[in-house]
Image (cartoon, rainbow, N blue to C red; front, side, top):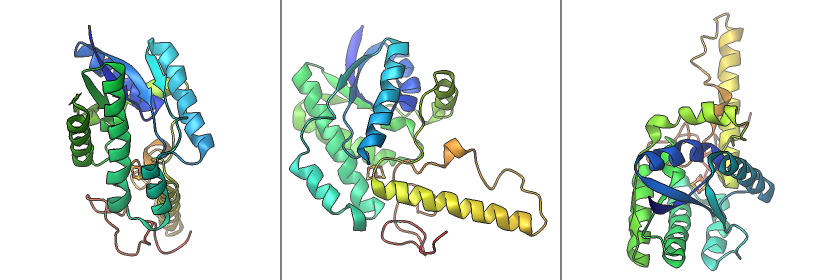
Length: 240
Ligand code: SF4
């Protein structure tokens, strides 16, 4: 069977991406390199979840997250506090996929892909653009596979394998935004209940589905720009 290097963001996304590639006749080697995840304990938790999935699925894993941070990541980090999703996400995706392409070339893979394409919360146009630019820079092929249709299946597999599901995309800014979005939903539901109406379940999706996974958090435009009433971090201006 042919192979590809698969950049993996987390265990839950791997549960649907790995079988999808195998069904298409390509055996993935999982590659975990996500310096965007903050804090370090969160990155360890996600990696542990991936290792657990890797053992269950017989997936070869290559972990390079402990490599020294580059000047490019330092620059991304230094601007994170004030950066909008439109500013920070393309850089974050570009750095990760460029590193994946470099690893694919170094390790002898002809092609690479990423589990980021599982998430409906990510900007897929940015993923494709970043993957193709990285592929051209390192003389390997980037293979895009839209797996948003099987995103919900990752819930079932995560529960079956008792995998940790993260409640935010990765960086500290996304954690902040997700927290505010959940708080806003709780306030909205409480207001409905206080007004004597029954909560019909549509106001608040399951807790698992509330993570802001990328640049398309609730309250933002489809391009991830700041919505009205949001701070430069994309969070609502009003506190909980
Ligand atoms: S929201 Fe996600 S994709 Fe965007 S910068 Fe933060 S970690 Fe990266």
